[in-house]
Length: 397
View 1 (cartoon, rainbow, N blue to C red):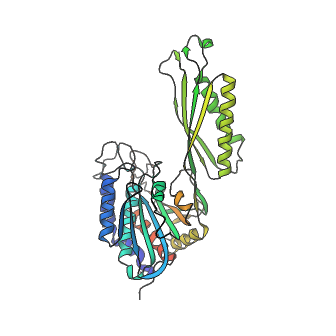
View 2 (view 1 turned 30 degrees about the vertical axis):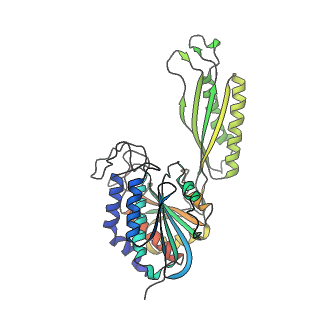
View 3 (view 1 turned 180 degrees about the vertical axis):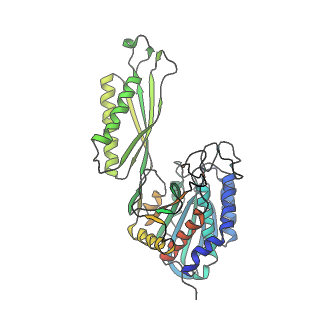
């Protein structure tokens, strides 16, 4: 494919991309339930001539294409799952599945992936090496990446590079962001169970109050960020739920706290966990409560390969020189593409998709989330450009 034809190819396939995206949006499916979605993806990939495998990581799909010329192996990953959210938009492609919505842009990611697959299949004579398209289930904290890796998605052949992207409503259309090294945070969830002794609200001296203990634990844990971590470092501790008691005049026996930790540096993560454990133990003992602390790792940090980020910078400068390009962008949001990047050098990047004039301004996971579909051909072009930059396409004569 000649370099100057890449964006033209993406634009020429926009109707195909949009049709797919809106169909996926109307028919969202939750993680590990993407049966209709994966069936459509498999059918499309098969029609393009790919070797298709279904049921990878339960509901995942892969499409493998071997070029006519020898070369390296590339993996491209796109997520498929929707969220348990009731959509509040009023367009003609609103979700028809009550209580389920594509509120994060995965519908766009799938259409981007299939469009790239379609264009690459038409360039097989110029393809060097192999490309594996990976459509992943259950990205939203349910372990879809791990499930696919356990099913061998990184084998036969082992990829030399991997690429992923996310359309990003935190930024407007015309913006692209990436970072060399850590870009998205590691995510952990935690649970703190505080067991006291309940009783009458008018006789608090007869109780061991877990609500009072919980309040002190919450406040003390927040000081970890301000007093134990350098202000030059990044970390977040957020409480998401506080549950205890059922009426105004009864002190409960138990309070349950849940929350999340977001970090870039594994040493800071370990420090935070250690300090939470110390705070829970000491305050629980001081207040007479039994406190149990439990933590689960969701995903490590997304860490990009510097050499591949450099190639992305070349692509953006060549195809989108007027775009606002941020080469130092970081987010405390997490992404399980990190499990791929832990094993294969690669790059994950954001493409701005909000549009103030069209009122497409609602953030990810909001019931009114929607994005400017012009981001689709831009994203397709970025991936095609990266495929070219990494040496997988030979220019036609």
